[in-house]
Length: 401
Image (cartoon, rainbow, N blue to C red; front, side):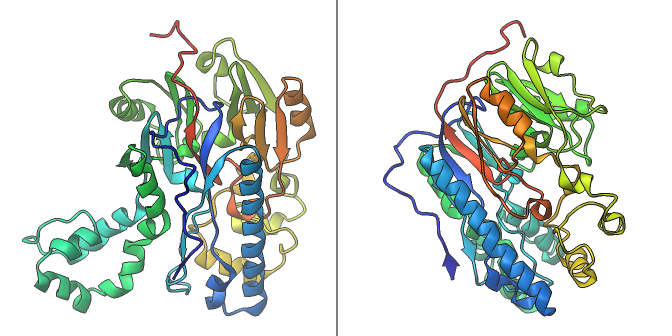
């Protein structure tokens, strides 16, 4: 049965959620959630299973620390659901909803999301449907409106019962939150380009990063201009999430990675703004020589310190958890900060240089002990999704047309 369900509380006022600036006072926020220890029962190697069970507990403890800090700062927190009815074995490794920002974003008062269950449904339905069959948007639509014979065929010949957990996974996880957003009066849009980790919102200007899969800046510019015609849209060739490259902390101030190979022209995108450059403190990068063989084998995608020689763990992760991990060896978690308001940010990294620099601007960095970031490849910004901030859309670069 589902556990830890999203609760729609009395504190929500009846007006639309909206976000215009990255630093406006945060009102409502999603904090991600990992799978519980009992999910890993399918792992046959006892010490590997025990490790994942411990990581599950410790990761949720970190998420709860983040939840508590946000609540302490006056932010209302919502958590996604976990459904323990999912089959737990190596063929059905569900990506935990730990990093909601990777497939959701709020722009103005419109909420964008990627419904991976819809994407899975399209692939599934294309394999079973005869050319004469009608088209259905989801498995729910199919079950409600398809002829009885077609539904029976899907169950009898195409294992619909076994596929159902995948086809309803998104709704099981985020359905309550989507319902809440709709109740506030917001439009919700299922859009395959939804990725809050590649987005920076600065009033009239939206900044979108590229990915390693798509660096066609001209084509992307057309897509974003068509979807957001009321904004000035800028493409940044970040080749990955921009929230691991820079962070707009407050008006006039950017924190960025001190990367000699960086091609981002900050003076062009943020004219007359100050840029604080931060040295790379990624521990994976610092330990490349110490664990050369391990990092070569795993391509620096993940790391659990102390287990570099555990061949059974490495084999289990590489065989079953490829969709969970990113590229932690390249991530700059120092920049993956959540801005609560112009005077408070939350980070998972104790970067004394950055903390001291931001203190001079009157900005407090709240550092939390978020465990296993080098396995999950996500800092505080990835683990959250801001739904509502105070403030109206501003024009910080009025000379732009």
